[in-house]
Image (tube, rainbow, N blue to C red):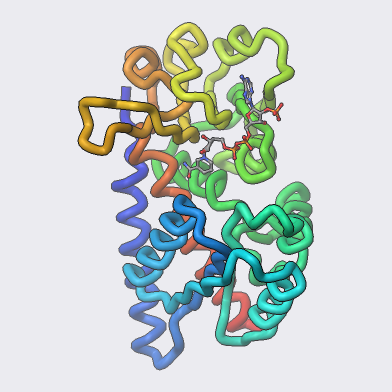
Length: 293
Ligand code: NAP
Protein backbone atom coordinates (compact mmCIF):
# COMPACT_ATOMS: atom_id res chain seq x y z
CA UNK A 1 0.00 0.00 0.00
CA UNK A 2 1.19 3.50 -0.83
CA UNK A 3 0.08 6.49 1.16
CA UNK A 4 -1.23 9.40 -0.89
CA UNK A 5 0.38 12.10 1.16
CA UNK A 6 -1.74 15.16 0.40
CA UNK A 7 0.07 17.26 2.95
CA UNK A 8 3.46 16.79 1.27
CA UNK A 9 2.06 17.28 -2.23
CA UNK A 10 0.15 20.39 -1.16
CA UNK A 11 3.44 21.79 0.16
CA UNK A 12 5.11 21.14 -3.20
CA UNK A 13 2.28 22.85 -5.09
CA UNK A 14 2.31 25.83 -2.73
CA UNK A 15 6.06 26.21 -3.39
CA UNK A 16 5.35 26.20 -7.13
CA UNK A 17 2.67 28.88 -6.70
CA UNK A 18 4.96 30.97 -4.48
CA UNK A 19 7.66 30.88 -7.16
CA UNK A 20 5.17 31.88 -9.83
CA UNK A 21 3.92 34.79 -7.73
CA UNK A 22 7.53 35.83 -7.05
CA UNK A 23 8.11 36.02 -10.79
CA UNK A 24 4.99 38.12 -11.32
CA UNK A 25 6.10 40.56 -8.65
CA UNK A 26 9.64 40.75 -10.04
CA UNK A 27 8.05 41.78 -13.35
CA UNK A 28 6.28 44.63 -11.56
CA UNK A 29 2.84 43.02 -11.52
CA UNK A 30 0.52 42.88 -8.56
CA UNK A 31 -0.04 39.57 -6.75
CA UNK A 32 -3.36 37.70 -6.98
CA UNK A 33 -5.91 38.65 -4.34
CA UNK A 34 -8.44 36.43 -2.54
CA UNK A 35 -11.11 37.80 -0.20
CA UNK A 36 -13.10 35.73 2.28
CA UNK A 37 -16.41 36.98 3.63
CA UNK A 38 -17.23 35.66 7.08
CA UNK A 39 -20.67 36.36 8.51
CA UNK A 40 -21.04 35.82 12.25
CA UNK A 41 -18.71 33.97 14.58
CA UNK A 42 -19.18 30.27 13.85
CA UNK A 43 -16.09 28.56 15.33
CA UNK A 44 -15.23 26.11 12.52
CA UNK A 45 -15.87 28.82 9.87
CA UNK A 46 -13.42 31.12 11.63
CA UNK A 47 -10.83 28.31 11.62
CA UNK A 48 -11.34 27.59 7.89
CA UNK A 49 -11.14 31.25 6.93
CA UNK A 50 -8.05 31.73 9.09
CA UNK A 51 -6.39 28.78 7.34
CA UNK A 52 -7.24 30.24 3.91
CA UNK A 53 -5.71 33.58 4.90
CA UNK A 54 -2.55 31.84 6.14
CA UNK A 55 -2.28 29.87 2.87
CA UNK A 56 -2.53 33.10 0.88
CA UNK A 57 0.24 34.71 2.89
CA UNK A 58 2.41 31.63 2.43
CA UNK A 59 2.26 31.82 -1.39
CA UNK A 60 2.48 35.62 -1.60
CA UNK A 61 -1.17 36.37 -2.46
CA UNK A 62 -2.89 39.41 -1.09
CA UNK A 63 -5.81 38.42 1.08
CA UNK A 64 -8.47 40.00 3.19
CA UNK A 65 -11.15 38.71 5.52
CA UNK A 66 -14.34 40.75 5.73
CA UNK A 67 -15.88 40.04 9.13
CA UNK A 68 -19.57 40.87 9.02
CA UNK A 69 -21.95 40.82 11.93
CA UNK A 70 -24.28 37.83 12.40
CA UNK A 71 -27.33 40.09 12.22
CA UNK A 72 -26.67 41.94 8.97
CA UNK A 73 -29.50 41.61 6.49
CA UNK A 74 -29.33 39.54 3.33
CA UNK A 75 -29.55 42.79 1.33
CA UNK A 76 -26.45 44.11 3.11
CA UNK A 77 -24.54 40.94 2.33
CA UNK A 78 -25.65 41.12 -1.30
CA UNK A 79 -24.35 44.67 -1.36
CA UNK A 80 -20.93 43.48 -0.12
CA UNK A 81 -20.93 40.75 -2.80
CA UNK A 82 -21.70 43.38 -5.44
CA UNK A 83 -18.82 45.58 -4.28
CA UNK A 84 -16.42 42.64 -4.49
CA UNK A 85 -17.76 41.77 -7.95
CA UNK A 86 -16.92 45.28 -9.10
CA UNK A 87 -13.54 45.61 -7.36
CA UNK A 88 -10.90 45.16 -10.06
CA UNK A 89 -8.24 44.47 -7.41
CA UNK A 90 -10.04 41.31 -6.23
CA UNK A 91 -9.48 38.20 -8.36
CA UNK A 92 -11.63 35.83 -6.40
CA UNK A 93 -13.74 35.74 -3.27
CA UNK A 94 -15.62 33.26 -1.20
CA UNK A 95 -18.56 33.61 1.13
CA UNK A 96 -17.94 31.13 3.92
CA UNK A 97 -20.86 28.77 4.55
CA UNK A 98 -22.96 28.15 6.56
CA UNK A 99 -24.65 31.53 6.58
CA UNK A 100 -27.04 32.59 9.37
CA UNK A 101 -30.47 31.01 9.00
CA UNK A 102 -32.18 34.26 7.91
CA UNK A 103 -30.19 34.17 4.67
CA UNK A 104 -30.68 32.16 1.52
CA UNK A 105 -27.28 30.54 0.76
CA UNK A 106 -28.16 29.86 -2.86
CA UNK A 107 -29.23 33.46 -3.53
CA UNK A 108 -25.90 34.70 -2.16
CA UNK A 109 -23.82 32.16 -4.12
CA UNK A 110 -25.64 33.06 -7.33
CA UNK A 111 -24.86 36.75 -6.79
CA UNK A 112 -21.11 36.09 -6.95
CA UNK A 113 -19.79 36.87 -10.42
CA UNK A 114 -18.85 33.56 -12.04
CA UNK A 115 -15.36 34.76 -13.01
CA UNK A 116 -14.62 35.48 -9.33
CA UNK A 117 -16.36 32.37 -7.94
CA UNK A 118 -13.19 30.50 -6.94
CA UNK A 119 -15.26 28.07 -4.83
CA UNK A 120 -16.90 26.92 -8.07
CA UNK A 121 -20.40 26.89 -6.55
CA UNK A 122 -22.11 29.26 -9.01
CA UNK A 123 -24.51 27.45 -11.39
CA UNK A 124 -22.54 28.81 -14.36
CA UNK A 125 -19.38 27.12 -13.11
CA UNK A 126 -21.24 23.91 -12.24
CA UNK A 127 -22.71 23.90 -15.75
CA UNK A 128 -19.32 24.49 -17.34
CA UNK A 129 -17.84 21.64 -15.33
CA UNK A 130 -20.64 19.34 -16.46
CA UNK A 131 -20.04 20.32 -20.09
CA UNK A 132 -16.27 20.02 -19.81
CA UNK A 133 -15.78 23.77 -20.40
CA UNK A 134 -13.26 25.89 -18.58
CA UNK A 135 -14.60 27.27 -15.32
CA UNK A 136 -13.91 26.87 -11.63
CA UNK A 137 -14.13 23.41 -10.13
CA UNK A 138 -14.95 23.13 -6.39
CA UNK A 139 -11.77 22.80 -4.36
CA UNK A 140 -12.20 19.33 -2.86
CA UNK A 141 -12.82 17.39 -6.10
CA UNK A 142 -10.24 19.57 -7.89
CA UNK A 143 -7.70 18.70 -5.18
CA UNK A 144 -8.46 14.98 -5.48
CA UNK A 145 -8.02 15.06 -9.27
CA UNK A 146 -4.66 16.80 -8.75
CA UNK A 147 -3.65 14.17 -6.18
CA UNK A 148 -4.43 11.35 -8.63
CA UNK A 149 -2.69 13.17 -11.48
CA UNK A 150 0.53 13.91 -9.63
CA UNK A 151 0.76 10.31 -8.45
CA UNK A 152 0.19 9.18 -12.05
CA UNK A 153 -2.62 6.88 -11.01
CA UNK A 154 -4.16 5.34 -14.10
CA UNK A 155 -7.92 5.85 -13.96
CA UNK A 156 -8.85 5.04 -17.56
CA UNK A 157 -11.59 2.44 -17.88
CA UNK A 158 -11.63 1.85 -14.13
CA UNK A 159 -14.77 1.45 -12.08
CA UNK A 160 -15.00 4.45 -9.76
CA UNK A 161 -17.57 4.40 -6.98
CA UNK A 162 -18.30 7.72 -5.27
CA UNK A 163 -20.18 7.61 -1.96
CA UNK A 164 -22.09 10.88 -1.57
CA UNK A 165 -23.78 13.29 -3.98
CA UNK A 166 -23.42 16.67 -2.31
CA UNK A 167 -23.01 19.67 -4.57
CA UNK A 168 -19.58 20.48 -3.11
CA UNK A 169 -18.00 17.02 -3.16
CA UNK A 170 -19.86 13.93 -4.38
CA UNK A 171 -21.65 15.34 -7.43
CA UNK A 172 -18.67 17.22 -8.94
CA UNK A 173 -16.37 14.32 -8.07
CA UNK A 174 -18.50 11.87 -10.05
CA UNK A 175 -18.65 14.28 -13.01
CA UNK A 176 -14.88 14.74 -13.07
CA UNK A 177 -14.06 11.05 -12.82
CA UNK A 178 -16.37 10.32 -15.74
CA UNK A 179 -14.92 13.07 -17.95
CA UNK A 180 -12.97 12.28 -21.09
CA UNK A 181 -9.67 13.20 -19.44
CA UNK A 182 -6.80 11.76 -17.47
CA UNK A 183 -7.51 11.52 -14.57
CA UNK A 184 -11.00 10.61 -15.68
CA UNK A 185 -12.45 8.20 -18.23
CA UNK A 186 -13.79 6.07 -15.41
CA UNK A 187 -17.05 4.20 -15.40
CA UNK A 188 -18.66 6.01 -12.49
CA UNK A 189 -21.26 4.81 -10.03
CA UNK A 190 -22.59 7.54 -7.77
CA UNK A 191 -24.08 6.26 -4.56
CA UNK A 192 -26.02 7.93 -1.71
CA UNK A 193 -28.12 7.17 1.34
CA UNK A 194 -30.84 5.42 -0.72
CA UNK A 195 -28.46 3.15 -2.60
CA UNK A 196 -29.25 -0.56 -2.24
CA UNK A 197 -26.37 -2.96 -1.58
CA UNK A 198 -23.84 -0.17 -1.07
CA UNK A 199 -21.33 -2.64 0.34
CA UNK A 200 -21.55 -4.92 -2.67
CA UNK A 201 -21.15 -2.00 -5.09
CA UNK A 202 -18.18 -0.53 -3.23
CA UNK A 203 -16.48 -3.93 -3.10
CA UNK A 204 -16.27 -3.89 -6.92
CA UNK A 205 -14.64 -0.47 -7.17
CA UNK A 206 -11.15 0.01 -8.59
CA UNK A 207 -11.30 3.55 -7.20
CA UNK A 208 -13.43 4.24 -4.15
CA UNK A 209 -14.09 7.82 -3.09
CA UNK A 210 -15.85 8.12 0.26
CA UNK A 211 -17.54 11.46 0.96
CA UNK A 212 -20.45 10.74 3.25
CA UNK A 213 -19.40 12.15 6.62
CA UNK A 214 -19.81 8.94 8.64
CA UNK A 215 -16.72 8.17 10.72
CA UNK A 216 -14.93 4.93 9.66
CA UNK A 217 -17.98 3.76 7.70
CA UNK A 218 -15.98 2.03 4.95
CA UNK A 219 -14.68 -1.24 6.33
CA UNK A 220 -12.33 -3.81 4.86
CA UNK A 221 -15.27 -5.82 3.43
CA UNK A 222 -16.24 -2.84 1.22
CA UNK A 223 -12.86 -2.59 -0.47
CA UNK A 224 -11.53 -4.66 -3.34
CA UNK A 225 -7.96 -5.99 -3.15
CA UNK A 226 -5.66 -3.41 -4.78
CA UNK A 227 -8.24 -0.60 -4.94
CA UNK A 228 -7.37 3.10 -4.74
CA UNK A 229 -9.17 4.60 -1.73
CA UNK A 230 -9.77 8.32 -1.35
CA UNK A 231 -11.14 9.36 2.02
CA UNK A 232 -12.83 12.76 1.96
CA UNK A 233 -14.60 12.56 5.33
CA UNK A 234 -13.46 14.48 8.35
CA UNK A 235 -15.20 13.80 11.66
CA UNK A 236 -14.23 14.44 15.24
CA UNK A 237 -14.44 11.45 17.54
CA UNK A 238 -13.80 11.38 21.26
CA UNK A 239 -10.33 10.29 22.30
CA UNK A 240 -9.67 10.58 26.02
CA UNK A 241 -5.99 9.73 25.39
CA UNK A 242 -5.53 13.09 23.67
CA UNK A 243 -5.16 16.38 25.47
CA UNK A 244 -7.86 17.90 23.26
CA UNK A 245 -10.20 15.01 24.08
CA UNK A 246 -10.84 14.22 20.41
CA UNK A 247 -9.19 13.23 17.16
CA UNK A 248 -10.03 13.49 13.50
CA UNK A 249 -11.01 10.43 11.49
CA UNK A 250 -12.20 9.89 7.95
CA UNK A 251 -15.07 7.93 6.43
CA UNK A 252 -12.72 4.97 5.98
CA UNK A 253 -11.53 2.58 8.67
CA UNK A 254 -7.92 3.31 7.77
CA UNK A 255 -6.19 0.55 9.75
CA UNK A 256 -8.42 -2.19 8.32
CA UNK A 257 -8.55 -0.92 4.74
CA UNK A 258 -4.87 0.05 4.38
CA UNK A 259 -3.90 -3.64 4.38
CA UNK A 260 -5.95 -4.27 1.29
CA UNK A 261 -5.67 -1.30 -1.05
CA UNK A 262 -2.95 -0.09 -3.42
CA UNK A 263 -3.21 3.60 -2.48
CA UNK A 264 -5.00 5.38 0.33
CA UNK A 265 -5.30 8.95 1.64
CA UNK A 266 -4.78 9.45 5.38
CA UNK A 267 -7.02 11.66 7.54
CA UNK A 268 -5.75 14.17 8.41
CA UNK A 269 -3.09 14.91 5.81
CA UNK A 270 -4.77 13.59 2.67
CA UNK A 271 -7.63 15.36 0.91
CA UNK A 272 -7.82 18.33 3.33
CA UNK A 273 -4.51 20.00 2.39
CA UNK A 274 -5.19 19.37 -1.31
CA UNK A 275 -8.54 21.15 -0.95
CA UNK A 276 -6.87 24.21 0.54
CA UNK A 277 -4.28 24.26 -2.23
CA UNK A 278 -6.93 23.90 -4.95
CA UNK A 279 -8.50 27.15 -3.76
CA UNK A 280 -5.14 28.87 -4.30
CA UNK A 281 -4.88 27.32 -7.78
CA UNK A 282 -8.37 28.57 -8.63
CA UNK A 283 -7.45 32.07 -7.43
CA UNK A 284 -4.32 32.05 -9.57
CA UNK A 285 -6.41 30.96 -12.55
CA UNK A 286 -8.88 33.81 -11.87
CA UNK A 287 -5.97 36.25 -11.69
CA UNK A 288 -4.61 35.21 -15.10
CA UNK A 289 -8.04 35.41 -16.67
CA UNK A 290 -8.51 38.93 -15.33
CA UNK A 291 -5.07 39.92 -16.63
CA UNK A 292 -6.04 38.71 -20.11
CA UNK A 293 -9.06 41.01 -20.23
P1 NAP B 1 -23.11 16.12 2.91
O1 NAP B 1 -23.55 17.34 2.21
O2 NAP B 1 -23.69 15.80 4.26
O3 NAP B 1 -23.36 14.88 1.93
C1 NAP B 1 -23.20 13.57 2.36
C2 NAP B 1 -23.58 12.64 1.25
O4 NAP B 1 -23.36 11.32 1.71
C3 NAP B 1 -25.04 12.74 0.83
O5 NAP B 1 -25.16 12.66 -0.56
C4 NAP B 1 -25.69 11.54 1.51
O6 NAP B 1 -26.75 10.95 0.76
C5 NAP B 1 -24.54 10.55 1.54
N1 NAP B 1 -24.68 9.60 2.64
C6 NAP B 1 -24.87 9.89 3.95
N2 NAP B 1 -24.97 8.76 4.67
C7 NAP B 1 -24.85 7.75 3.80
C8 NAP B 1 -24.87 6.33 3.92
N3 NAP B 1 -25.04 5.75 5.11
N4 NAP B 1 -24.70 5.59 2.81
C9 NAP B 1 -24.51 6.17 1.60
N5 NAP B 1 -24.49 7.50 1.41
C10 NAP B 1 -24.65 8.28 2.50
O7 NAP B 1 -21.53 16.10 3.13
P2 NAP B 1 -20.35 16.73 2.25
O8 NAP B 1 -20.36 18.20 2.42
O9 NAP B 1 -20.36 16.15 0.89
O10 NAP B 1 -19.10 16.17 3.06
C11 NAP B 1 -18.88 14.78 3.24
C12 NAP B 1 -17.73 14.58 4.20
O11 NAP B 1 -16.57 15.15 3.64
C13 NAP B 1 -17.89 15.26 5.56
O12 NAP B 1 -17.23 14.47 6.55
C14 NAP B 1 -17.13 16.56 5.40
O13 NAP B 1 -16.64 17.06 6.63
C15 NAP B 1 -16.00 16.10 4.52
N6 NAP B 1 -15.38 17.15 3.72
C16 NAP B 1 -14.04 17.17 3.68
C17 NAP B 1 -13.40 18.09 2.90
C18 NAP B 1 -11.91 18.09 2.88
O14 NAP B 1 -11.32 19.07 2.44
N7 NAP B 1 -11.28 17.00 3.27
C19 NAP B 1 -14.12 19.01 2.15
C20 NAP B 1 -15.52 18.95 2.16
C21 NAP B 1 -16.14 18.00 2.95
P3 NAP B 1 -28.16 11.72 0.46
O15 NAP B 1 -27.85 12.68 -0.64
O16 NAP B 1 -29.05 10.63 0.04
O17 NAP B 1 -28.52 12.39 1.74
